[in-house]
Amino acid sequence: EVRNQIEQAMNNNDIIIYTRDTHFNDYLNTHEGKYLPVSHCLINTKGWEIENSIAHPEYFRAYVINKETFGTLEWERYRDVIEAADEILICGLVSSICVVSNAIILRAMFPEKDIIFLSEASAGLTPEDHAAACTIMKCNHINVI
Image (cartoon, rainbow, N blue to C red):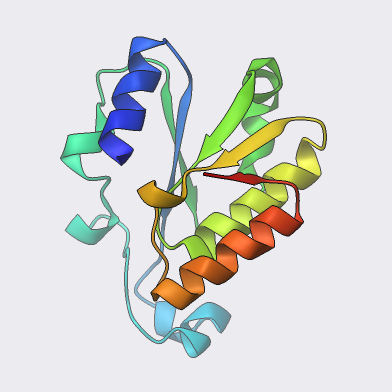
């Protein structure tokens, strides 16, 4: 599903913005690491890289935001292109942590923009977490499909 969405976006010449969880060797000593004590997405490791089948580095309208925690305020760098878009489609991992955090930030930044969460192209830590994220997004006027 994610691959199809990315290919469709590329065919439409749409902007694609990837967010990449980015942690460092001291992750377990961070606030997040104390509550989620699993080293992951350590910078410059395979687990940090965007999967080759969806990365498409040749696509000139794709950008990457390296985020060191759940959500990011780096969306501001792309305000003009986001405002020009008809809608914002979001998906990814982990829906109940990173995706919902960024969805709420985007909702606050763009209160009049249609935001659509692609539920079937996303996953939470558990099915229950994913369902909870969907509920939170719906409560914040994010369309869940």
